[in-house]
Length: 169
Ligand code: AR6
Image 1 (cartoon, helix red, strand yellow):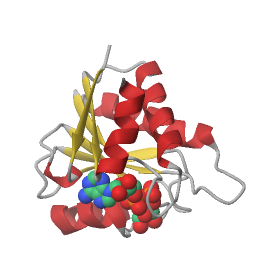
Image 2 (cartoon, protein in one colour):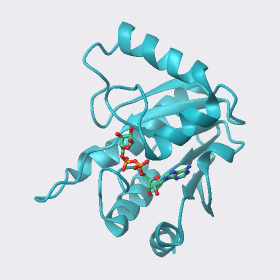
Image 3 (tube, protein in one colour):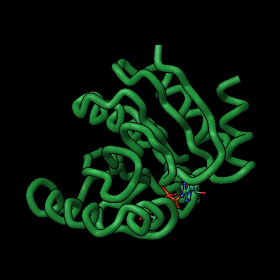
Image 4 (spheres, protein in one colour):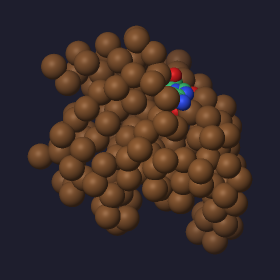
C-alpha cells in the first residue's frame, strides 16, 4: 500500500526522490508549477527536456504521458514531466487525467523512486475543477500498482488542500 500524505506549499522545495511537473506537450516550460520548477531547478532541466523532445517525442509529449529528467538544483533527484488534459466548456477526459498519475508512477518505478510528490495536475491554467481533480488523483494513486512507498500531494493553496483532504478522508 502506498502511503498518501498531503502538504501545503511549493513543490520545488520537497526533498523527495521525484517531483512531478504539470508540463505541456512542448516540454519547453511555461507558467504555474512548470515555470516554478524550471526557475528553481535551473537550465539543466530544460536542456534535458529539449534532448528528450528531439530524440523521442518530435511531436511533443502526448497528453497523459510522462518522462523523467534529472532535477538540476532542486533537492529532489528527478523531475517527472507529465501533460495534463485541458478542461473545456464541455468537460475534460478524466481517463487522461488519471493516466498522468498512473504513467508518472510507472516512470517513478522505472527510476527506482520510493517517494514522489505531485501537484494538483490540470487545476491551474488547464482549469480542471479542483474537487473532481482531487477525486481522480486520489482514486488513481490508491488503485495504482507501484513500488512507490509514499506519494505526497503538494497543494499550493488552502482550497486545493481542503479538496484533497476531503478525498483522502
Ligand atoms: N508548487 C505546487 N503547486 C503549484 C505551484 C508550486 N510551486 N505553482 C502552482 N501550483 P498549473 P496545469 C499549483 O497551471 O493546470 C503551465 O504553463 C496551481 O495552484 O501549474 O496542469 C504548463 O506549461 C494549480 O493548483 O498546471 C502548461 O502549459 C496546480 O499547481 C499548463 O500550465 C496546477 O496548475 C499546465 O496547466
